[in-house]
Image (cartoon, rainbow, N blue to C red; front, side, top):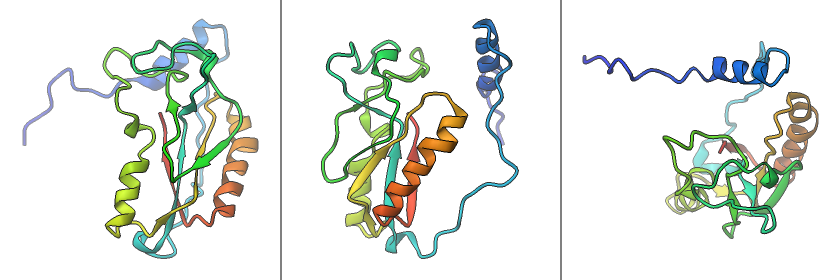
Length: 172
């Protein structure tokens, strides 16, 4: 078996993030981690399940500056409340509000943060039973407390309300 090239190593993002926050004057960043993982096996096969999609992509905000592919980081485009939109249509979502590696990656393909088309095809082919009527957006406000105490329970409530059996989380 061939070895990977010497330069082919994981990006040390945890250490880079800690150093970034320290340079900004914050205490050492503590990553969220839990002794128990709150995931549950599917009660039925995926082909018989209703799937909800949750993305961290932001709804397009016309007055918030450049949000298109290749846009620089745009804090004005952030959102701070869970949102829902129809799974039948394809909402206009963007990812300029998140810090991704803009040197080695592009934002040209919206299917990477909102794969509704592929999921609809999976339903047609019988691989997934159905999609919920709505897809949902999870804010990326970098607060573990708000995510745990506010956003996650609201997303859970909406997914339950939609009759979801499973959830696909798509970070941007």
